Length: 245
Image (cartoon, rainbow, N blue to C red; front, side):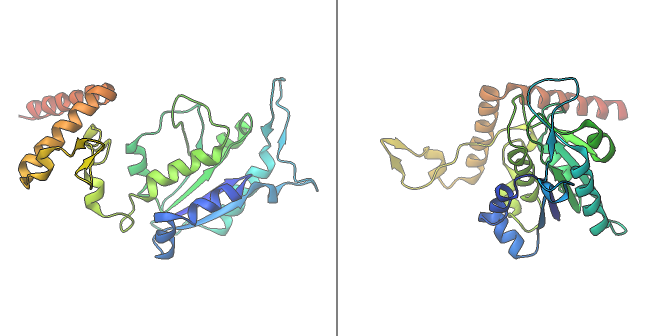
């Protein structure tokens, strides 16, 4: 998979791709990336990429021309071959919420182009003409589109075959609509608190049952909305099965 990030601050993005598991995935050829500086496509000698909003108001808006030229250059330089899939995303608070299902869906694309917003956002006409989808990370506002873009990248690349072992992904938070169970490692006793006895029992069936109950309890405690959704899905599945019978 290839990630192309369009940004006014490439140094923020470059650091991420050169560290930790991502760096290993790049070195192994599983992931490739390109960071495009939108300022390189500005028309004036000051490389101006923002201007005051029409209608007045505080702040500045990213101009359409440099962004459009940057996107068109990327599309021309990296044409999609037969059978490949590409997607252009724009992280924005004025969008549907981003979920794990979206990460799994996007991980099946060959090329993701992510546009990083700044200031009051970007000219709406760019979104209408070029962006395939926009997604919100949550009910809050970030000043850095780069942080939002890299969050999406992080949720996606780790799902690509060969980046992380399959066993590590099976029982993570949001898999099967539940949060992940608590984790423990050595020492056995820390500040007077002992690792749960069940995890030291060697009884794998009992450990699996304990972990599932912990997932249910944590989800019920911290994200009951997920549990309601999960239970609703179970009911839907049962109804469909009964209808089929």
